[in-house]
Amino acid sequence: MTTLYDTLGVARTAVAAEIKAAYRKLTQQLHPDKNPGDREAEERFKLVTGAYEVLGDPSRRKLYDEFGDVSLSRGFDPKLARAARRGPERGADLGVEIDLPLLVALRGGSFEQVVDRSPQLPARVKLTVPAGCSAGQRLRLGGLGRPGSPAGDLWLTIRGLLPDPRWRLVEVREELPDRPPRLRRDLVGRLDVPLGAVYSGGSVLVEHAPWGPLSVALPPRSLDPVRVPGHGWRDPRGQTTGDLVLELVLRWPRPDPMLEAMLRNARY
Image 1 (cartoon, helix red, strand yellow):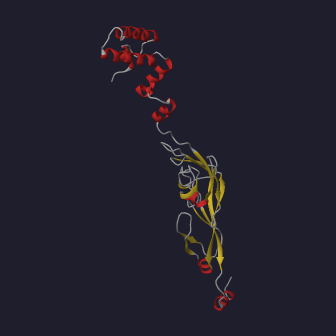
Image 2 (image 1 turned 30 degrees about the horizontal axis):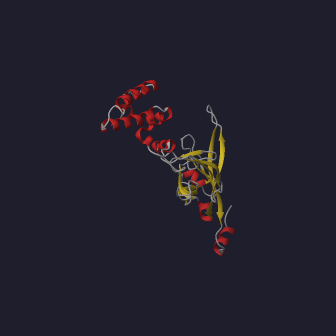
Image 3 (image 1 turned 90 degrees about the vertical axis):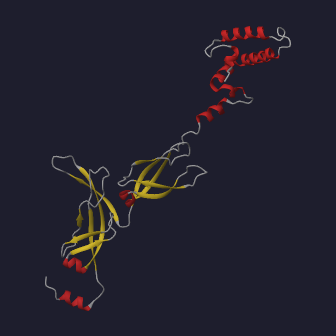
């Protein structure tokens, strides 16, 4: 493809003086007064003149070097051309603060959240968080920020943990010999136990245990809290595992004359 530099017979690196000298030499050779009736010389004269109008103007030459022939078009806008050449830009990051339900923070999971990403996108998006999240933690969710190419990220800050109706989080500082102290995070909840199980002991099923249904052994004739090691809060880095602590609550049976008589006659 012939360039304006080819038309003047100079290199792209030519300085202004070289371009001007080439232009003068060619226009003297091709001038219509020296070439009467020569259509080819006349056309070349026009091309040389047009090439010098661009390359002889420093600002127009700069645009030509950057964009080529498209810069010669009427109404050419270099700002729009640069934006089009760069293509779509990466979307901006967004930040959202939320209060996370206790069990979602414990086990991880997905939930819907209103995020102001763009008027063209749905306001509610599905967010997924890993297990073991803590208050104050900051999570990066890729591709859920402002739209773009690629989309920006969503930075999710966990402001706090919402209380659970069954379980509460209790932090216990453990002093260990020859080791630095560590923070154990237990999950504490109440367990209703029928009179027969309290009296005789045995296994009871904790259907709504945080990590799924759990069979727990109860000692006979005791309402002391039952501790299940390793079933509390789990550190995602595996450094600390809390316990599950069950506070036993006696569930009294319905009034029964026979049971009442047996209890009255029981030996203590």
